[in-house]
Image 1 (cartoon, rainbow, N blue to C red):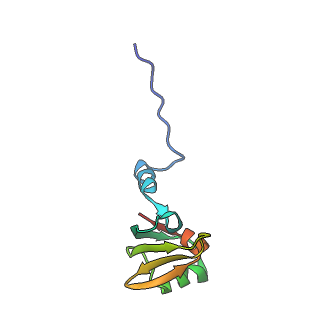
Image 2: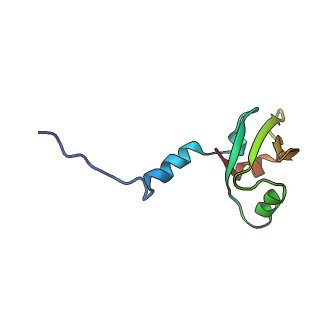
Image 3: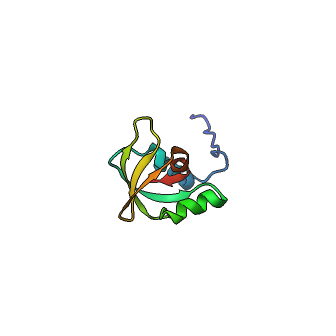
Length: 96
């Protein structure tokens, strides 16, 4: 006879949400030359509003052009123009 299999939930998260998180990363983690699509903006208040005012909103494609030698800032192309972002700001942008 086989032993019973124990089924547990992953911290009360649905399997679909866990799979989606595996595909997501932050803009800061994106490599040079990659084009990614914005999934979500973390952050609140003025910082979130400033990022949205720069044209980075859900569904927008972002191309990572280059990264400074020490990693800050990150230069990206968004909606046809070049933009430099601090690492802290890029960390708030979830992409896939």
